[in-house]
Image (cartoon, rainbow, N blue to C red; front, side, top):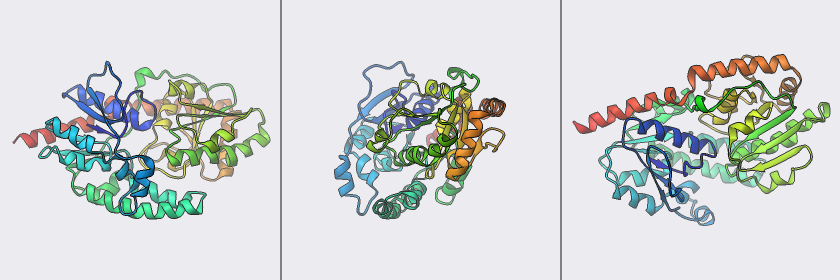
Length: 376
């Protein structure tokens, strides 16, 4: 397995998916993960973890991104390709389209792309929604190069793991085989409790990922500003690694910017409502699944809960304008019966669909099928 980030410690949705899918694969196969960055010296994980150096610096990658996507230059390291070549394997699973060249070194092993997102879709959404005209122009060109690159990679892999039905529909037009492996949660490690009594709003994310920063600033400036006119005692917590200078500037008596935390689920549980003001993204949001599992009510844009099969008013509240997000947030903060009903329904949905052992089963079946086929 090739990871675009180290899965340990498991901060952020990408790392969590990498970690849990590797654990599930290791229940039936010998698994080695090669991941970008420095690996912890010792782990108790059931798979072998090896760190691989970065490709180029951010500035160097940006300077070279005229004809290929920025992340191609950032992640396309000779170190990853060399590490793959040193480890003969029967099957290789990559977590990013930008590892396709490294995967080619493992030929003739079958290659699976674990597509956390539709990369082109994310970039196109950024091109429409970024507040900066200069950034929108940059994203438009990035969308052109990303679309070209993503289509080429999809045509060359043996199978794609998609996080949702919508993503699967996109991939099915461009690749030979698609299997849906949704994001999940470790239910055994996620106790459920009633929504917190305090009027605390939380947003959780890795803020070096631009859509999360945009969502956090929208939540602070446009959504919570409306909530505070009616509920001045409400507080907002922006939880997660790499908060940007613009986010830090907004910290104050009613806004806490925590930086990286050790236990994201605990941070969710101490808050009454997770508000996901995302306007860009693909795949499914692990933060939403974790909140629903822990008893934190979810208020979200359509994008923020896409692919989860939730019903508005039954499991979560869905709103897309700043006004409607603020209204939904205020309802959850002031209506105990509504908050309790939404939280209980959401936990039941997670128990039925989103434990990692259930989510990973189609991946394991695909592994067996490809391994059997390659042995013929």
